[in-house]
Image (cartoon, rainbow, N blue to C red; front, side, top):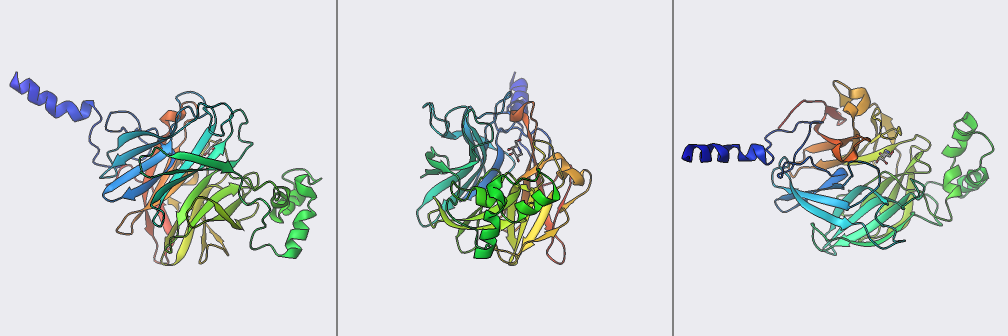
Length: 368
Ligand code: DGJ
């Protein structure tokens, strides 16, 4: 009897979500309760000796948000305990975060001056597909929430990007306010996009914002990097000191380049932006840009991915880069499963750096 009890005790971790001792990219990743981690498009945040993993809670069927943003906690980055929903959808009809909206790519940061945890996320309004293209703001006193929804908006209404001079603004305004008579994807249309056709179209109501990340620089200033202008151009948006709003200062990156899923790291004074192309839920080749200054100029590089399936970012799409206290970086990506979004898998891979500082993400079946 005693032996059976001891055997069961030994098998317990296997039965209720085995202890993970390795990272296994793109494999099922169970939490401490034995369920696949349902936190997608997410980010990590370290608070003391605890790591928090925030992400989209996705349903088994369908594409809308039925619960909200969830968090998990861990001390070793491999074994994660669910903390539940930290920002819940609203039951109030007409609320921007009404159940059935779409909340994507939540990023949580800590503001040292206010002592608040701030969440920014991509928000699409219920019943409107991906047309709203807004950013949601939520705040909490605790990393595990509950987060209070503050508002959602399109950034930078009435503002022009810093790099556009008066002459550029006039040119952008002449591009027929987004109804360029030329057909989409023609060379003339592409030129009009690069020259700010959609920036001008959305100048009054605010710039579109879909896939996004948040980056905190060494001086504590926060930036929101987002796929704007019909997913054609990335925008770098400066946040206010409390991280709860935009200052109105922004900059266009790779105009017309059709980039999304932005992730950012800074090392030895250089900013590296790793993003994807726009192919819906299907993977594509990662793109990479670098700059000495967040406000440009940004230079394009080849994909940082190496190894099997590097051309499709290993079947994934980036979502965040986190920095360990010892300076190492880890690239986080989602392997989307649009049939069952909740089962979408996770790719975490260490980032190494070439002698000239260029980041490299090499596939490994498993690693510690
Ligand atoms: C790709 C984006 O990166 C995802 O976050 C999601 O918005 C899908 N597109 C929707 O098709």
